[in-house]
Image (cartoon, rainbow over all chains, first blue to last red):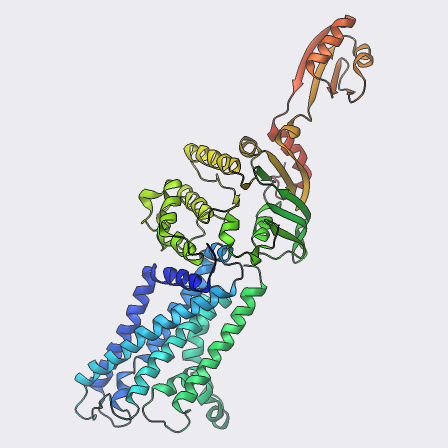
Amino acid sequence: MKITAGGVVAAEWTKFSSLRSTWITTGISVLLLIAFGAIASASFSGDSLSAVDLALSGSTLAALTVGVLGALLGASEYTTGMIRATLAAVPRRLPVLWSKSLVAGLAAVVVMTAGAFAAFAVSSAVLNDKVSGLALGDDGVLRALIGAGLYLGLVAVLGVALGMLVRSSAGAIAILAGLLLIVPGLAALLPDSISDAINPYLPSNAGSAVMALTQGEGTLAPWTGLAVFAGYVVLTLAVAAYRLKKTDA
Amino acid sequence: MIQVREVTKRYGANTVVDHLSFTAKPGQVTGFLGPNGAGKSTTMRMIVGLDAPNSGDVLVNGKPYASAKAPLHEIGVLLEAKAVHPGRTAVSHLLAMARTHGISRSRVDEVLGLAGLGAVAHKRVGAFSLGMGQRLGIAAALLGDPAVVMLDEPVNGLDPEGVLWVRNLLAGLAAEGRTVMLSSHLMSEVSLIADHLVIVGRGKLLADTTVADFVTAEGVRVVTAAPDALRNVITGAGVTVTSTGAEELFVTGATAREIGLAAATRGIPLFELTPQNASLEEAFMDLTRDAVEYEAAR
């Protein structure tokens, strides 16, 4: 009998998979991704968006729900008092944060990548006649779909980090929604010269770059954007790790 | 073994634990007593590293808890009943803890059976009563077959049958050579289980003693026609006599039998000879009176 890294990951997977809310939230995320993609694809008749952009138009809402999933996973340790049992079993503490992030992130990547492909398949089937269809083999299509899964996986990790950091479900979800939805709106209020400079680097804009089929003016290159978003996630994880290690549970 | 050495914990300006030292030894049940707010829970949290002391240190089986290779095998704790995600079943909760250490599924079922939770193993914890929550907490504490078992107020919310079960369980664990420590604010409860008492008030150590020593500090009330004569007869080494009324004496250090025999030899009439074994509860109240943090107005 001995504490191992693999054991801590297995424990976090048990925690993750033994909650009904996990499955409900994950299911809703996939449903939103597919449904919004299908609706947008069927109704949009302009030429500013490609078939892939339309198929992934549910990604903003899906990001919010997987983020909430992560935040609940992290914060519920504290809101339920479970953290005492968790840290009594793993007194070195940090393995808990890494394992929880890994489990939530991998689960979200797997499910949301599948969701992105499903959304593309459904959307292509119902695509408005005025928009030209795309195949998986076309330039950038695979990258956009896989990128969507990776981005949403990182959002789940961001949620876990925020939940463990602020230790409150409501607080973590508010910060998450603020970062993903409100900050871009606020940035638009700034003078154009400033907002044009920072816009591409805002978390949701940087992360979304990987899902866009063609790069417009003022967006980062796909993988650069994802890397910038990953940077935000790593930064949040580092702060969460610091608080976990240094403060009383 | 748990060694608490000169531990101090402050929250802001409030000193919750103040230079506290004691040792809980293997093979014994140590009762950790004190009024509400005495710092018992904080001390227990520091023992398993949930809170860090401002000064001093704590060793579990001779080493800092965080350095243990198999923490759940070193110490099993119940800190708060129902500090469990309410959406999880009893078995998933224990399984999640077990997996960190590679503890088998059969051990999970074993502790659930031991705690009498076999029938509700697959029920969600949110539906559990406080007593069932306590049982789940105790099952979790036993999961890693630990050398030290530490329980914070384990009998809270248990029915009489459950209280008896905890009592027998803890006595059994100590008899196996494990270190057992339980906290309570009820002297009567602890005196039935514990061998060793650690009593705290306002974070300070008030007494580190045995249950037997704690009660024998009492004396004998004597009412006699000749208090002065009796006082001369029985006063001696280790015996103190105080006058508590015109015909009343209070004697410590001598038994009622010794006093009665001494009086009879000298022909001193006694009207009353009463051993004053104030209850443990009273002794505890006397000891902690000045250290009560939250007292009802009177």
